[in-house]
Image (cartoon, rainbow, N blue to C red):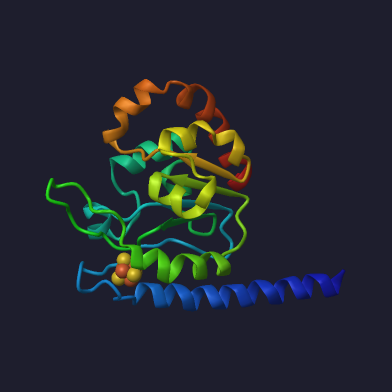
Length: 207
Ligand code: SF4
């Protein structure tokens, strides 16, 4: 029993060390320097029990260095039933984009998609080093495509509608942006069926 505890503690220390180094490398990353102004934003720790995988920072997150520090974040917290203190408690919650830097704007003023180089360079390495999460939320199409692979459906609506296939460890969500207000209205099952389940799972994952 004592040996098990010692082995476990040794493994935890190793994970911690590898993760700290990897996070340092990510935060120093300049791969996309020719295309954007690098400022990688990532919140993670070796003890987190819940992982939120999102797309890439918007301008506000780029400026503050804090993920979901915007109205989308307020809505996501409300969906999850957590306050800001819990949401930003890195020891319990990891927040990881499939792109870590703000990718800039397209010609219509919308955010560009996350840079492909980012997921290629970091996602596998990162998730091989992070703890196994009892609960992962996949927020939006980029997170779903990247982490569900062939299991992702034709679009976000279909993937989120099929949430029972991925539960209990993974829950796909639409992006909480105001741009999805019409989607939320059109899909009332999201609020009546999925959100109560989401809140229950979040509570059991992080207390
Ligand atoms: S988006 Fe990712 S790969 Fe590109 S510079 Fe930022 S951290 Fe590096």
